[in-house]
Structures are given as C-alpha cells and as structure tokens.
Image 1 (cartoon, one colour):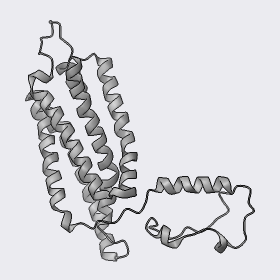
Image 2 (image 1 turned 180 degrees about the vertical axis):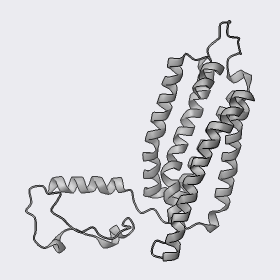
Image 3 (image 1 turned 60 degrees about the vertical axis):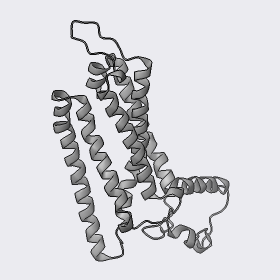
Image 4 (image 1 turned 90 degrees about the vertical axis):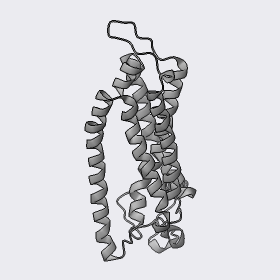
Length: 244
C-alpha cells in the first residue's frame, strides 16, 4: 500500500506512512465498537453483514480510484516532477480507507464468535466439530494471507493496481453474497449484553462497597442466575480471597 501511495498518488514517504499508520490505528480501535454493537443489540450476524457491506463499499471506492484517471494524479517518469494528489483525490482515498477500517471493526470481533455459536458445547459430537471449524478457519486465514502477499502483490506490480484491488473486491462481494444466503442455516443467538457494560457495573459496585465488611456466607453475595446465564459459558466462578 505504501508503494501505491508513493508511486501512484505521488505522496511523500512520510505522508504515506502517516496515512497508513492512522488507518492501522483506526482499524485496531473499531473492533471495540463492533463488538459492543453485536453484543448489545444487533447480534453477530447483522453486525457482520452490515460491516461487510461497509467494507465492500470502501473497497469499491479504492478500486475505482485506482482505475479512473480522474481520481489520481497523472503518471510521470522518474526524471520528471510528479504532481501530488490533490485534496479531492486524497479525500476519496481517505473515505475508502475509513470505510474499510470501520467495516473491519464489525467483522473481526464477530466472525470467530459467530462460528462458535453454530456448535453446542454441551454436545460431545459438536464439540469435536468446533475444533475442526477453527482448524479450517485459521488455515483459510493463513492461506489467504499467503495469496495476498504473493499473487495479489504480483498482480499489483506487474498488471495494474486496478486489477490488484479489484480481485479482493470481487472476492469480498462473493463472500458477502454466500454469507447472506446461508442465513436460514445459521444458529443466531440473541444478544446477551456487552461484557464491557457488566465490567463497568462491577467496578462501580466494588468502589461503592469498598468499606463494607466481607460476609462469611458466600450465598449472601449478589448473584443473579437468570441475568448471568446468557453471558456465562463456563458456569459460575467460585469466590476466592486471592483478589481481596
């Protein structure tokens, strides 16, 4: 991507690196928002679907900016003065990167969890299938990364950036269509509430009760089995004195 920004948009190396750093930082923070939305009210399927569409729009804009000459500065030779991309062309680039960053924020925290939702951990047969799913998932992720740094990079360097961006854009579109058409086959669990909200509630309650004496009978401590059932996957944790 740095090569595209410096060779095609004629950005200085420092500006190109700063752009990608901002993009990477944004893409690292957005999963917190995506996870909160999925756990609070939207659910994982719809969060992945909407986020994938947002990501797809960003990829389409990025691909068009590499194809249409109006969206990038004119090409130049090494010994010529290269005109830097103007504000409008940079705005197109920033919008595409921002959309992909927000789109990935809804995909990355939900895909693995949504895959795990398809299996019942209490069923021994499905528990075995869970491990198979994760094996194939991480194998596919590794294989796709290998293709990205070999085949896609070769296309970008030797054929063109438009096709280099277009291939993953088309692949993303196909994956979205397949994912949506599989909706009747999925197990869609209701949102159980964000763990961040519960964490804040625990911190506030612990601070307010910091001066109270500890009771000897743990059954007198607060616990709500109905409220905790949806967000507890391993049962109730045993009270200990280690963290006092």
